Structure formats: structure tokens, C-alpha cells
Amino acid sequence: MTNTNRNHRNFIDRDGTYCDGLVTFHNNYLPNDLVHDMLSKLSAIPFKELTTGGRTLERPGIFMVKRNEHDHVPFARCPSAETQIMEDVDDNVLSIVNYINSKEGTNFNHFKIQVYDNNRVPIAHHSDKRADLASGSSIGIIRFTNHDEFRDTSLIRKKDGHKTHFKMANNSLLILNEQANIEYTHGVSKMNMPTGVSISIVLREVGTYVREDGHWYGIGCRYKTNEELEKALASGNIPKKTMTSHEMNRAFIRAFVVENKSWKDVRDNVYKDIILNSF
Ligand SMILES: O=C(O)CCC(=O)C(=O)O
Image 1 (cartoon, protein in one colour):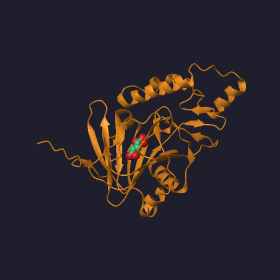
Image 2: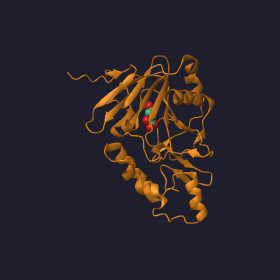
Image 3: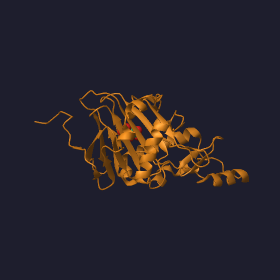
Image 4: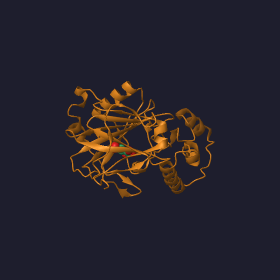
């Protein structure tokens, strides 16, 4: 007889490296003094409604960032950021980020924080959108839950559908390197177990920046640095855009779908025209 109880899954819940050596999982990651009371501290964040394609998601959330040396704002053009303003990171989130960056050698500067009200709120499997992610950078997900509750976070290998489940309990950290994000989708499944609140922080290293005057530069843009953009603006020799913003939005949606499905298509093919038209 088929076991239809979805709680009976083979979970990975030990520290280690998994999934073709591309993914690292840590339990009890932050030291006690740092993790103490973190769920209730994070619960006090003024979360907002998130939408994708105009549709409200079941998980409220917020985006926080660490600005760069020019005080410009890292911005990842991803589906759920469509109506969001990037907030400056608060002290609690910063304490977590600083610990992870110094321990893992990462430069995470962009943080998506989401509240999952109970185990009935899923997140569909997807790859993170690479248009604006720093080259070679990893993606981290750290989770905080009540007591010994957990969320079922799983990875699906795009080429053959192979699925690996991670038991993300309080203070667990999953790190996907760049190749893992290309080869796998990740998502959070529903389970047959109503539980309390869980808060996750998705940590990314974003290499695209927005200035106060509305100009963009960085990895996802035509001009890769602020200096290059300044020079182009000063020369008055800015090329004419070949796409309207409506066409750009449509191109993004197409590119997002490709990234979710294909493990072969590389960033430069998928985002080429968008990059040339971003400045
Ligand atoms: O909250 C999680 O565990 C994952 C969230 C995620 O992958 C995302 O929002 O892109």
C-alpha cells in the first residue's frame, strides 16, 4: 500500500554537505547568545504584503539591504520584489548577517525575511533569479521556529526530478552555492501538521545597485560600476533603449520561467537584452 502520509519523509537533519556537494546544511547554527529570543525579536518586524504578478502571497515579508560604499541600494529583480521598497537592515538581522558573513566568507547584502504562519503555507519550487546576483555567490536560508517545530525545505534536481528534503528546525542554515541554484529548485512544502510561526531569512549577494536618481548599475546592468555609469552620463552619449519597460517586464517573466525549468541555460543568454537596457 502506498504511504500517503506526507509527514513520512526521509529528512536530512545532520550537519554536512549534500546534493552533489553543492549544498551545505547546518543545525543549531548561531551561538546561544545570538539566537536567544530571535524568533520573537524578528516577529516585531513590520512585515508587508508581498505580491507576485499582482497576486498576494500567503507569506507576509520584507526586504532589507546593506548599502554599498556609495550608499546605493542592492536590488535583486525577482518576482516577489515587484512592489517592494528595500529597507535598511535592522540591528537584529544585521547581527545574524554579520555572524554568517564572517563565518562562511560570504558577502550577503540583501535579505528577504518571510513569515510562515503554519505548515499550510508553502513556497513553490523555484530557482533564485540570477540577473542581479553577484557572480559565483551562494544563497543562504536561515530559519527560526517555535520549540522543536520545523519546515520541510526540499531541493528538486532539474535534470531528473530527484528530491532531497531538509528538516529546517529552529536556527538551521541551508547554503546553496551558485551551481546548486542552477541545477536545483528549492521550495517549502505543506505538511499535515498544523504548527506555529516560522520566520526565514533568505540571504543573497546582490551585485546590482539603484541610485537615488533612478539609474541602475552593476552585474545586471549595461554599466558595471558607478564610475562607468557616471562617465556615460557625463558624456551625454547614453544609448537609446531598445525595449520599453513593459517589454522589459515581459522579458523578465520569460527569463524567470526559463531559470525555474532549465539547468543548462546560462545567465548571459537569458538576461542579455535586459542587461543592455538596464541603466
Ligand atoms: O523561506 C524559505 O525557506 C525559502 C524562501 C525562498 O526560497 C524565497 O523566498 O525565494
